[in-house]
Length: 140
Figure 1 (spheres, helix red, strand yellow):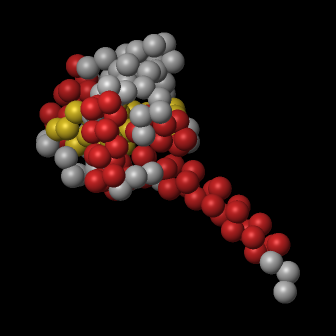
Figure 2: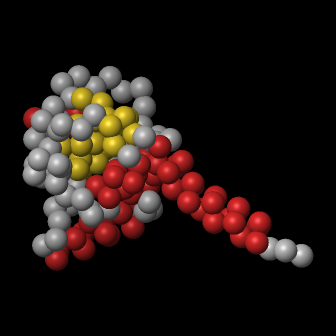
């Protein structure tokens, strides 16, 4: 039996899966009006949520705001990590001085207000949320 087509299909599926899950984000990505981006590629969003990218193109620091447990699935999709792994990852970055851990808000409305008043801030809010005073960023 020839296993090359099977291996090729498996490899192709592995390449497509990360882009598919991140582009089907279970929520809405919002940002402060100071953020120049209007769209982000799924890989760029993952780099932000994993701490690989900490500054926007113009040098503005990225401030991640996490909305309690209301967006756990979206955080997993955006970062490629489970919720506890995400938290541990950012604690390590913070303790080592290599990153500022995300700010956590328990209320969606307060999170939106914080994004609207914090330059460079982003957050994922539940789908269907009406977010005023912030801009929506589309994920490609």
